[in-house]
Image (cartoon, rainbow, N blue to C red):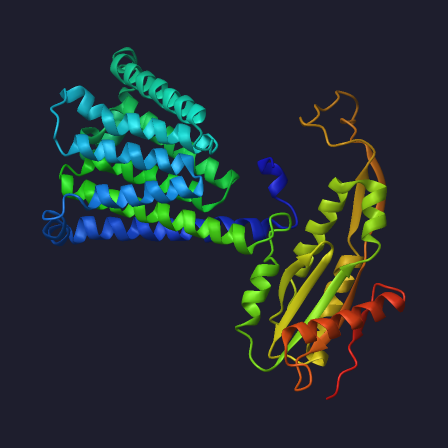
Amino acid sequence: MPLYAKFGPDTLTYLYNIFKHLFVYAALLVLVVYFVEAQRALLLDWFVPLPWIGYLSLSISAVIALQFGRSRLFWVCILLAILLFFTHGEIALSSAFNRYLPLIFLVILGYLSCAKDSGFSAHNLVITLAKICVVAIGSYLVLEYIPAVTQNSLSPIYSFANHIDPRLNALYSPFEWLIVIFILILCFVRFIMISDNNHGALLLAVVLVAMMPAYAAFELHNVLALVLATSFLYAMLKDSFNMAFKDELTAIPSRRALMQYVNTLGRKYVVVMADIDHFKKFNDTYGHDVGDEVLRLVASRLNKVGGGGKAFRFGGEEFVLIFPRKTPQQALPFVEQIRQMIADYPIALRNKPRPKKRPKPVSAKGSAAKISQGKTVKITASFGVAKRSSQFSQFSDIMKQADVALYAAKKAGRNCVQLAKQPE
């Protein structure tokens, strides 16, 4: 989805999603900076006797990435281990190559952040390795030969960095600073475009690798490798959890999440079954793509339910709302509000499919490129409400009662809410 398309009625939801993913990695970064700067002696005491801890943590993360099909994180773990090996000084390198190593790795990280997970078939592994080698060799040649050509034109950057702190010029040359800043911006924009834990972990990797030249001690590089391995593990486990417990189409909790959530409920709660009216007919008339958009729309509205309610996709066009510690009478106003919100939302149908590229404006008096808009339709949903009681204490029984109430709502003309007939 283009970036401009993300900003609309759900802008706050989108921004919250960015903040939610960024917070964990920002907290890890702050924690690392604090310990490395304020508790450096303590870290050195811990990690000097454990030179293998970085390799072990990266190996564990690489194995789990292999199992979860996260090829980019797998390659980052392998390359980080190589970077750690060379910074340990096991093999003597030229001073130029030793200086360029973090920058070369930074460029590779930028490439991997923009690439896609390609799996672990022999063909894909060879292709990815070849691409990484090309990026590494190209980076080395650029770092070796371009700075001499651009030295005079980049002198203002040197002066600016020297004015801020002379130590900045000791870390990177002006040309190298341009590369670092470009990769940081590139990975941050990529994270904004695809706000998930994988890209958050890759962004943290870029920041920490960019910091490595500031710390000469191998033990501190070991700390950074340990933190990155931990962030990769968190990213893989969190994304795998989301895949298992979130509905892929609508991005709200799935039926599996519902069954897990039910186990946390007490003795008092309300179950609401929701069903989109005439959805099959709508799907057959306008196509499955439009039907998917309708499902996403309804799910986004249900997900905004108040009163402490929580929305789940049950299957097909059916959704479930759970209101913990509520009676049907207390939950009813919030259900009515959501029903009205869905019914009032117009859907503009297109006569033609959305073009792959944004059309260019036509140069005429006030006229612009015309988008082929079709008619506007509205959708409605019906709701059945049931509560947990002494007679219906099992969740499956309460669901049946809510389903009976939903059938009554359909029979009553749809686009309404019906309460199950249950004993008080």
